Picture: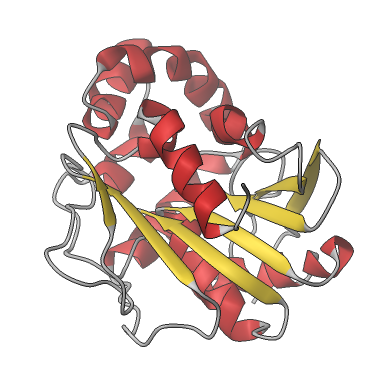
Length: 244
C-alpha cells in the first residue's frame, strides 16, 4: 500500500506536545481558532494527512487506519506523552493512532469523530471532491455549520486545494472508505473527551455514550464546533488536558 508521508507543522509554544488532526477535506489551517488557547503551555503541532493540505496524494485504500499509519510514521518527531485532538475523519485517525502506539498517547479529544456514531446523512464527503465553483462550494460547505458566516471564508481555500493535481481522486478514495467505516466502541487506553455539535448535519450527534463517555454537546452548533463555537471547545480542550 503506497502512502504519502503525513506532514507535520509546528504552530508554536513550549511544553508537552499536542497534535491537531483535521477532518475530511480540511488541513492544518482549520485549527487557527484553537491553537492559540494551548500555545502558552504546550508545544502545538498540526498535521496535513495524505490527500490533504501540503501532503502528497497517495492515500492507500483511503481508510482512517491507513492515514493513521502515515501519521504514526512521523509521530516520532513529536516526542512522548502526546495529546491528540481530532475532528471528524481526524477523530477516527486519532483513535487508530492510539491503538498503533498506546504507550505514547496521553489523552484524546475527539470532535464529532467519524465512524463511531450514527452514519452520515448529508453526503458531504461524496459531494466535496466534485465541487467546481464558488457557488458549488457555498452549497456543499453550507451543511457544515449553522451560521453561513463560518464557512464563507473557507470557499477560496477549498477551491485552491481541489486544484492540486490528483487531489480530487485522492479525496474520492478517502470518501469511499469513510462510507464503509465503523470503529469498535471499546475505549482506548488513553482518557477520551468527546465533543459534538447538537445540530450536526454531517455526522448527527449520537444519543448516549460514545467510546464509554457521554459527549459534551454544544447547542445550536453544526459539524465544526471548534470553529463555530471555538471558545466553548477551547475550554473543554484545556480541561481535558488539565490546563488551568
